[in-house]
Length: 385
Image (cartoon, rainbow, N blue to C red; front, side):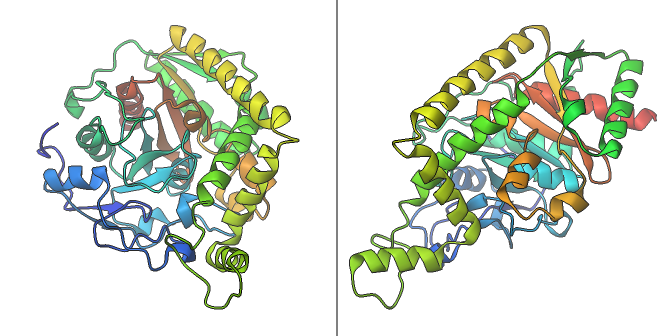
């Protein structure tokens, strides 16, 4: 779309790792507390060209990374829509716990030029809002190929008016393995209720035998943390970023600057990533994870030969348990559903079905519009019951 005729909001909130020219770009980290960006991200330029105002959000995770010391952002206190860094599915999980929508497009759909990298092969920008049509219209504006981003693609899935999206005969697959993983009976009961409502409307929904989610999670943990540790190495206080005031050697400056400037959650990711890519561990972890990622991608492609969407819960357990997580193992476990679209690059959307409970539609690559069609089906069901 060349204009914003369908986008009505007066302002868009941006994550703090998105560059705005002559504005501080802190990434919510002390290591960048004094960094001012000399240029704007491509998506900022797109918003400007569409005459849409923008500003940074008031609070964000450090480099967009949810950690064990990070509380869930209360999106109800934010002004929507928000464009946030998404490498793990965290925006969809936060949206679920706040009973709003969050959309992640096919990998490469939104330009990442001018966005601080976290885990390159996982990174994408997500849109969170309490209005589904608003997300779709903003995605229409942002889905432009950018030659400054080598991973940017043409995604022709967008272009139709939101109200003209037709819910044709869609087939939806549900991986059976989700039922043995979810730890909250309330999540499952609400999820099954929506399945029944969709079936009563004539939607074809079938449960399929799968065994990839736990392997997928392990693969995500290995590869994303290796990429995080690599990207964080650039913050060395030599070129830019926070520099400690007292040091005697370059090594001490480097060590103390990172020690003082980076939060504990980022440090834990760096340590884990460095361990996993260690020469003695590379073949066991990194090389194996690359092959498993390819295998799981092939499995999903086979599923999408017969189905339009995959549907599963967005989160594993309720907010009370999630908010009490105090270790990385449980944090990673909580991401078992949300991480999958980021690992493989598929489009996904969180749809609220009850307070703090949501379901997630995952679509074929470059068929982003299908996840919105799935949501429109859900809204029709919601209006009928």
